[in-house]
Image (cartoon, rainbow, N blue to C red; front, side, top):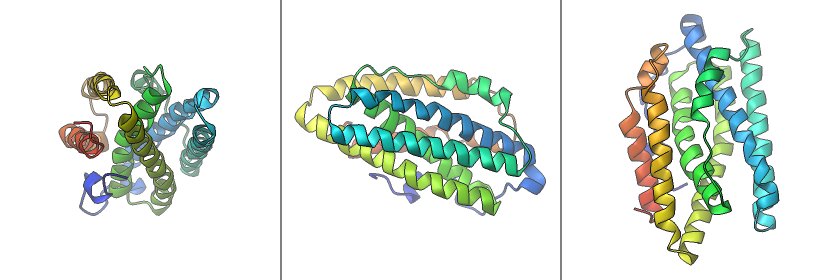
Length: 219
C-alpha cells in the first residue's frame, strides 16, 4: 500500500477496551464491522462487468474475502452470546452509498476511498480492543483489506497513466463521497466511549486519505 500501517494508526497507547468492562461498546463495534462487511460483499455484482480476466478474478477474490469477514465477525458476536445490533443496522443503511457507473469509478469508490477509510478504522479497533480473540479476528481481516486497497491504488494509477482526464472526474466523485461519509458520521451522537474516541479523529482520517491521493498522483 502507499501508506504504511504506522501512518494509518490513530491510537498509539495500550488497548483500553476489554469485554469484561466495555461489553456493550465492543459488541456495537463488532456489529458495525459485521454490517460493513455485508455491504462490501455487494462488490460481487461487478464480476460480470470486469474488463478482463484479471479484474474478474480480483472481484471473485474480494467477494470471497468479504464473505469470510462477515463470518469472522458473526462468530465473534456468537462467542460473546450476542447478535448483530438492529440499531446499528439502521445507522449503516445511511452509510452504504454507491455512486459508481463505470469499472474505474467502482475501483476508486470501493477500494481506494471506501476500503481505504475502513482500513483506518479496522486498525483503530485492533489497537484499542484488548481481547485476544477479537484482535486475532481483526488481524485476519486486515491482511485481506490491505490487499484490496493495494489493488485499487495500483489499478487506478495505471488507468490515470493511460487516461489523465479521469483524474478530475474521480476527484469530484471522491469529494461527494467524503462529504456523504462525514455528514453521516458527524450527524450521529456517539453511543459509547469507543465511538467518542472515533469522533475525535475525523480530520486525521481525512488527512490520511488525502496523503493516499497525493501518493497516487491525484492531488
